[in-house]
Amino acid sequence: MAIEVRPATVFADVATMVGPKNPDSNVCWCLSYRLPSKENLALARRQRGERVQRLVRETPAPGVLAYDGDEVVGWAAVHPRADTSFATNRRIPHVDDVDVWSLWCVRVRPGHRGQGISHSLVAGAVDFARASGAPAIEAYPVDNGGERVDLTMAYVGTRSLFERAGFTKAADTTSVINGFPRVIMRLELT
Image (cartoon, rainbow, N blue to C red; front, side):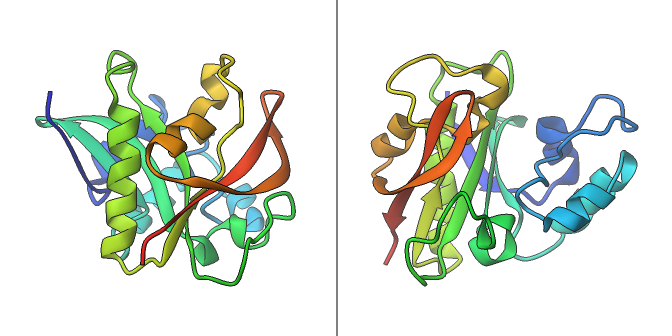
């Protein structure tokens, strides 16, 4: 299996990964960290998908997609931290004043999990950030010590996933998901 990771510029493929089956459902669309809280909370149902349609037309794209041939099999949200709610998040502190990029969501489609696609997505997100001029990239995974993470909360990734990609722990946070503390993992790109 040769996984190719590309910038997320095809709305239908992004919708396959983060959109609902019913367009009138009120789901995340991976906007919770991407938009300021007030804007995120104001968007409902179809408006959420319409907002993502606009994001995929922007430069840089809102993330990357993994493909197995022509089939989209994964998504990773990655963008400059300054354009996300991590810019003002009190639970996840800034390590320094570097204009880092944030990588906050890694999703693999059911039926494709356990094949290393999350590793390809992280590597692709790093390559995308580097090609876009990012000096460093951060992720905010759980430090689960090898314990099982509930699938609905696994989108943040695990510390070990990012360690295998060359990231190192930069700081603790006061954020907790699924009972596990989140840590700031960072990779310098310059």
